[in-house]
Amino acid sequence: MRLLGIERSKLKSLGAINTAQEISQQPILWRKLYDKIQSNQDELKEFMSIVKRDCNKIILTGAGTSAYLGISLRGIFFKKLGLEVVSVPTTDLVTNPKDFITGEDRLLMISFARSGNSPESLAAVELCDKLAKKCAHLIITCNPDGALFKYESRFPRYDLLMPHEANDKSLAMTSSYSCMLLAGTLVAHVDELDLLEDQISLLACHGEALTKNYSDLLQEISNKPFDRMVCLGSGAFLGTATEARLKMLELTGGKVVTSNDSFLGFRHGPKAIINEKTLMVYFFSNDPYVMQYEKDLIRDTQSDSYHLLSLGITHTESIADQVDIEIKVCNNVNIHKDLLPVGYIVPLQILSFHKSIQLGLNPDLPSTNGAIHRVVQGVNIYSFKDQY
Image (cartoon, rainbow, N blue to C red; front, side):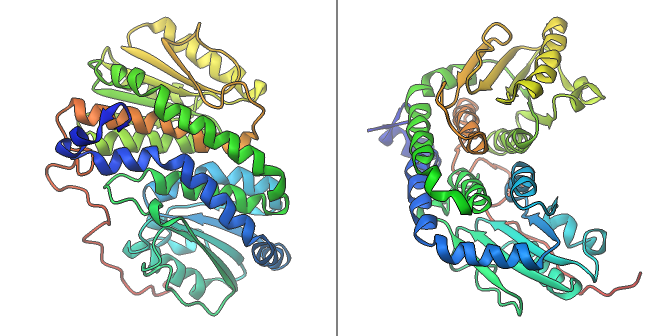
């Protein structure tokens, strides 16, 4: 049996079997996750009704990949709940908590974590409990044995545990990322879960098509001599671009230098990164208004014609005449736009996986110098004393 176009026996010898399995299994896990959340819809709705009544602000938080979920989800929660929404990494929250929390805040803190054992994860919820007037907690995690999942608060909390397969064994987060992103999206849409059942089925079907039908193309792209990659996205897709950038950086052990930005922001200095060995990756919105700005940037960049290759990820509208390679996610089906970021990340996971192998690395553990670990190490947490 082949995964991402490679036989299982070869994947094992390459040190790639876990990552290949974790990328490939995502559509199955999306279905499992939807069924789980739907079966607990009533208690989740009750918790969120308390939030709507009692809270004035939402903080979306996590570390590394888990922090990028907040970038994709903040707009959804703002539109659905009508509350102030702040996306802030635990790594910022722990060092400068009073930049984000006041003693009058009545918060919903949504914490994302694969393991829940990163030192900052626990420190962040403890600080919010200490500093805010009230802090309800929604814990979205993949590990029932993690410190975050076991955290006890005097405030209301709801735990949302991902399917156990989403607790990735590999260094790089794949299943865990997309499942937690989908979980956050479904929480925001908790009042209309029944209407999304067919949408999740479509998302999963097209996710399977991505892993089965595009692996050869993405492997071919990985063989191109790029040593830089730039990912651009707008709105929720800025979170996707940020995660895609990290995936390539992690899985290539830093051999591919990566950057991300918004389409409009990229002109303001970051564009200097482009050279003749740069892969440009564009995550296109499906909003015609937003796409006007995105296409302007591409025309500007393409006219410079000094990057190596361009890859466009899109939904319905063809942009084949504006990029070198186009991949359509949920091709031309009527799917809710809030679900698209879940599918958009998959091609870049596959591309990063194949680039890791092309560079002679082991995707399951690509950090040859031990610079990064599955759970961050060496972080000291200090007691916070309000001195200002």
